Amino acid sequence: MQETDLHDLSDDPDYTALQHQDTMSNSSSKSVRMCDSSKSEIVYSKENVAVHPSQYASERISGRLCIIKQGSSFFLKSLSSLELPRVLSVANGTPMQGSPNEVSSIYDSMRVDGITASGTSSAFEYRGRHRRKTHDPTHDLSIHVLEKFSLVTKFAREATTQLFGEFHESHELLHDREQKDSSPLDAAVVSQPNDAQSKADSIVATSDSTELDKLSLVWGKPRQSPLNHEEWETFLDSEGRVMNSNALIKRIFYGGLEHELRKEVWKFLLGYYEYESTYAEREYLESVRKLDYETIKSQWKSISVVQAKRFTKFRERKSLIDKDVVRTDRSVPYFEGDDNPNVIVLRDILLTYSFYNFDLGYCQGMSDLLSPILFVMRDEYEAFWSFVALMERLGPNFNRDQSGMHSQLFALSKLVELLDHSLHNYFRQADCLNYFFCFRWILIQFKREFEYEKTMHLWEVLWTHHLSEHFHLYICIAILKSHKKKIMEEQMDFDTLLKFINGLSNQIDLDSVIRDAEALCVCAGGNGAACIPPGTPPSCPVDLDAGLYDQQDDEILKLFELFKLFPAIL
Image 1 (tube, rainbow, N blue to C red):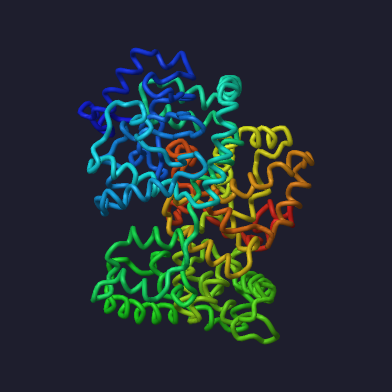
Image 2: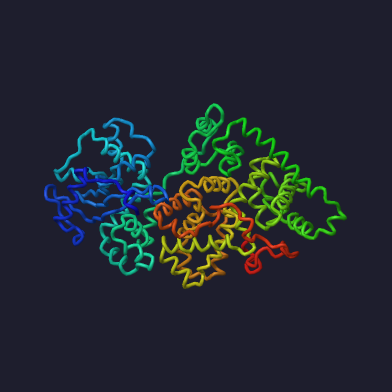
């Protein structure tokens, strides 16, 4: 971390006092101390602990973590040394509103059963020194920030109570285990003692997965109700521009969209529309794209039967598309029944795309990605261009050399190693480190793991790129961690694991998985981002020179060698 990322805290009296206290008491050699004036007991203290509101290291909020016992109560986290100027921008982009009494009310509501889950600098007020003034805006903001990050619902309070109860009894044992279990990655992080971010990230890298499981209960924010039309209108100015795209993205990430809004808002998420575009500009764009679609479609529609006999690649692609569309989502009312016109539209869009992107053509799995888009758009040309926008991100998943898939599976392996070392070690012992059992999840973005409505909800969450453009990898980890006990206890090998993973279809709690994935992404922070190679999909558009599919006649019949080895994947 560069020094410019840190704020000067020398003018903070509490911070100065705490630094002086550490010097006098040699806190690094004692994990349990007694406070003089109030008989408070500091059961654990750690410098340079950071809160990660996003995956970006520049946005982390660093401070000191203290767990203090006052009678039968426990208190977490002094905010006196937090970087409050940065907190101000992270919290909501605006100064805190409300009176001191309202702030006090927030604090009181967070204290349950003797546990102050969020914690405040008030723990040090019990020691009779450096009391904060009632109207201190820094203190008020501190309370507000922790209220934002903790989100202490009844569920979180219970989890927090359990967490600190167990931590109080076992923190010394955990410290010893951290020293034994540190990996080469951990050592590399810990070897930078002057880097506050590295120290904070090393806590994640060395923590036992049990602690991360508990953290997810505390950090994973509750899901919100879907964005409705009335609220959507508040994001637009009089000419139709989205006034605050970041706020919109965050709102969709935490709540999704009501179905009636998807036709319009998905186009923004996919890049079909620019957030700064006006109603008039979008109307003009629609007219142009409708004409463009008809032009491209006419290219294959004009191929006669005689020409088709001499056009091997066209015949093969058309044959494969015809086979795939009649078995794509036929249980969904929109596509069910014989001679369904929507199935014909699905086929036409895929054939048109194979001419639009002739190098890539058509690959098995594309019909799964198009089906929900057509279901939402209901218009052929709008569905086509939305699909084109999605394939700009996911096209590398279908590379002939599987480079796009391999880069994501490699990143997934490194992230599991970072966030759950014991699970990663189990996969190593079971010869499963290629993570091919997650192939279907990544290739078609969990399309076959959830019901239709939930799939659409997950996709709009992923398309926001709110915490990470690779949030789908954290979804994978969240699912694996939720079944970790069963996987390890039953000693699943690759074949058993693949069968088990495919059998999870429609049995996964999506909201819980998103919350856990959020917590894992926040925990991973900069270390997580470093695990993902540059250019890993969906971070960049398709590179037409990157060797998608070669032009051999058997191209379509031999989509992936992996499909031949593991036909259960699709």
